[in-house]
Image (cartoon, rainbow over all chains, first blue to last red; front, top):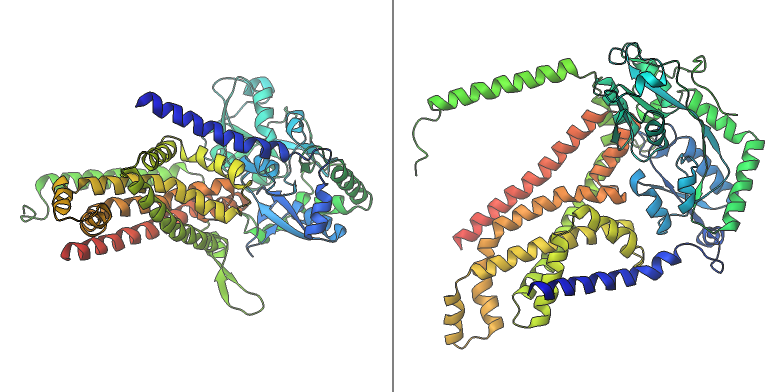
Length: 294
Length: 263
């Protein structure tokens, strides 16, 4: 009975994998298949995968998505003359969802890395992000340098699968790293004194510092590499890559990207849209830590 | 029945006192140790939405998510019951092939983590089958739960004594007639409590579907949490909604059970 059961199970598994095989290789647009640009034109709708990430993409109190990337996506669709369908997607599944064709491209603050580039194509950067670290005033008192934080008794918190988590693991290999689904949870761990510090993409760390100056601080002596974010596409689609690259170049030249970046990353005029913690609309432009891109 | 007697005994007082102390200590710890700015208004703003043009109130992200969870629960339950009864009867079939197929399916689903099942189904299978996101969510949930329903059905039918089958056979009834008119009505009464249990579990398991970004309650909540950072308010509210939904299923199930026991 036992052996026969294992054999039939194996058969089913083989059948399932056979059924999958042609499909998965087919999702990578090869030489002959049409570009996703033509597909978008034919459909009249562009589907864009996004994951919630302040202030890139957020769920507004009016039920709609708002944020830097929502503005970018809407403008991109308008320039292509198509409708836009924003597909909110859990960060953990955003790459498989793109590869299996659930949407046409990812516009979700995805930092270009060589590792990701192996499975995805990236456009030129439409945004440059800095990273910031905040630490707990009491827990991390006296800790200033990289070596101070790179010790086994130090705990970091960060968002799983995001670039800051990789950076923490590289700069502070000795420290313990707790991973969460969103960066707000990592920040809350520091606020509660369960972690010494967290690293996240700006401007969130600066906003956290402004909201909780009595608990949080910033270690002055630590510098982080800057990141560049691009749209992510399925591999091998030269046409789409060319269209998006040139769109990004044009929008840098006419100042659209810079103007939107200033609005979302250097002010908090948008805070009432998402019922954020301090929706005072205070501008953070005077803060020296909040570096803009160029 | 031994339920009579004094409502509270000596030991009960002690137990209550311990519970109160533990709860008070917990509340104190949370309020003292948690650096958190409670903002319950976030819940109201993300639960209801006032249409600026008509001035009417409508459901916002959180309640819309609850609506999707309700939809998943109802359609998932119906599908899971239909498929589960089919599979359960397949497992009892006299023929070898249906029995083997049903057994393979049940074991395959029961012995893989639901999370892995959801990922494999959604990213490999359903995109090839051109299923929409919500439809794949419903199918996925039903497929997961039908394996458990099948086992409940099988156990229920097998719990009806062999003598019933033999008596029916001696009266010249066919296998199908025996199953339909004699065994199943008796089995139904026995499988009802575990079935209700399974449906409650289905509602809670529907939160797994949030991983494939279907805007049900858990996914909607994760969006609101990520956008507003009102972590505790949102998750407490979500827990209350799930509790209300699941306990009403249990209540309905209990009522149905009492009605059936009078038949």
